[in-house]
Amino acid sequence: MLATSEAVANAVLHGEACSEHGGIRLRVDGADDGLWVEVCDCGRFRGCAVPAPENSTGGRGMVIMAAVTDGFELVPNGSGTRVRFGKRQVAAAA
Image (cartoon, rainbow, N blue to C red; front, side, top):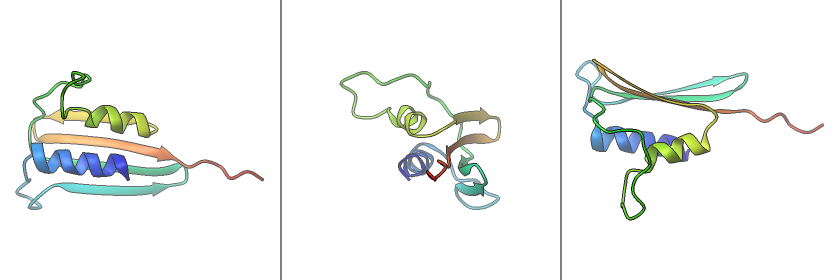
């Protein structure tokens, strides 16, 4: 939930709405191995994926998302920005 909230907030604050669906896209896929989330917008990623300075009040979202998920990718391309991450299901103890 934390990673999803951060990704959507980043798309709203820093991204750009896509005309074909009027906003950002949030996709959640449940799979046998866990839950996978994708957030897409039509803005161009202009930052760099490096940790923020210690005294900064922002710039830690991607680091947080990567830390709390099992797989994180940021894919900027010509048509927008896509963030995808997942959390693997932990097998229950017998």
